[in-house]
Image (cartoon, rainbow, N blue to C red):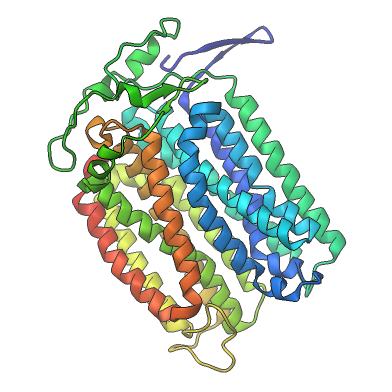
Length: 482
């Protein structure tokens, strides 16, 4: 009967637990991105009836760039907005902001399209700070690995639902009519807003007590159930040596505030401690892996473009997306059992090997310029069937993306619960900082791909892959339970 909190509703008694809340926020994210991913995939096709042909030709690229740049703003804003409105409402508001791009494409005015992508980027930055932080905050310390895996497992179903819609919508279609465009994006908007509101209403049925991990100040919330004290007891006794974190002073109560729903958030940043925080080995390693994560997410966008530019087959894009979605579900669903059987270090090595195979196959199967223009007779180093290449690349992409996501979220969740590592900062600050690094990496990568070419990009990925592997092996896996 851990994590009990009673709520009288309709004459029934509900028992709160972490799994219910994880299911709620995970389904919310799944619905958001089930609408967003296919919408992003054929923005240019839906805009073909726009009078501004220059914008039509570049909007997919512009949309991704704006979303990555303004997710930096959203990441910075998230901890402070969380302190004002609470974590639950922040998750809902960030979800609603995702609908901005749909409204812009439906209206077909240049400034509305750009504003919509900007709002979606801010929402993306906020939600990827708020949700991982929320999952970490409601989890027992030893359950963070399991709960993050469950969360990502449910979230990855967006790859199947979203890309299936994309595949069916693009069936034998060279253009999409204005009527179909408005209907599709109106549906996306409704799904996004409904998911956000439903998530907030469902989470409001639960009361969340903050973990007593940072402040030594005793809690005045005597009315909260004592079962929460048992829930977090072992977190108080979780000790670290000086390998990755050094203990700072404990005089940081002025940095903490409690939001309406009880989750502690930062009230301000003590800049004199900021360098001490970001320069310690664990956070420096987190910086490296989030730079690489930005590279990976960008390649997920680039590789389908390479398929279309090399083989000229529109079906290959949503087909690869569906394969990626299936693999992500399988990998995330089995990851926790694999981790218990093998441990995270062998899985990290498998991830690195798969990543090398992914980079190598991309290098030999596509021409240097195929990331941003048709191949036009240029031949890659090897010539294979586009369909079979899609199967292999889809599998490798799904595995690498899922493994990277789990490794990143799990280790960030574990580090954020350690008093010695956080240097008096709240856990949301770590998620905000790493989301900023990820967003900067993604924005810079998208901006430079047309200029350095695919091969130069892959070389940079290989360099950061080596740094990523050793960042995990030497620093971050130290925090993981398995």
